[in-house]
Image (cartoon, helix red, strand yellow):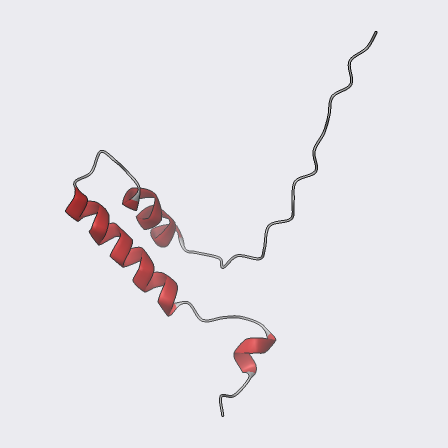
Length: 66
């Protein structure tokens, strides 16, 4: 009797912003438990600032605010 593998389809991920390597590194280091709390906070602050500076791309970026 052959066993069947149950393959679950992965749910599609929502589109994410493309982050730079520097920002990705900051996010990674912000969760590194080997670092001090203040160092992790600095990495998290840097990553947050970089994410806020990212401008949206596509049709929504071309719309003017009233």
